Image (cartoon, rainbow over all chains, first blue to last red; front, top):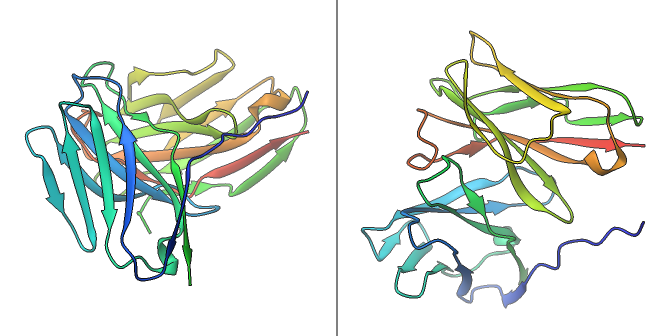
Length: 112
Length: 115
């Protein structure tokens, strides 16, 4: 039969602009979250993580914001570069079942 | 480079066959996780091993099995392959056994194509 691919949300940004990628998580008991970047043909690469006792965490050019009230996670990338073009996943662990649950991802395209 | 290695990089086989995928975790990591990533399912957790013992099971089919050896490398065995098993298979590793508390580092994956 016909195969249907995932319809990823897409985001296109101009090089140098800031990017914001959003993720709605499902379980209010989730207490650890990770953002991964996956380039075409490669494995997911760890970017940044945050625990539920924090609202914000910053890394190099990236910031993760956690809003537990609305179960929302965002990844901000400052001064986006062509090398940032990839699919970005958020992962949550509800601390039950001992596993991570991954979102479907957002495809980021940086326009030079 | 995450430090997690996987072989082979690509695998093409026929329906009904059996294949083995191999993973070596990062130095010092005791847990190995296997994931399947297909076009219509996203990244799905299959199974976790910690220090040689099965720790957690996800959406792993009965046709699939895994093991972790004393040197901590792991193998994922896929048997009676079907067309729908075509996917990317990733291995990840973490330091300890608490999947919910630790960062998982992913390998480059094995692309399996079943014809």
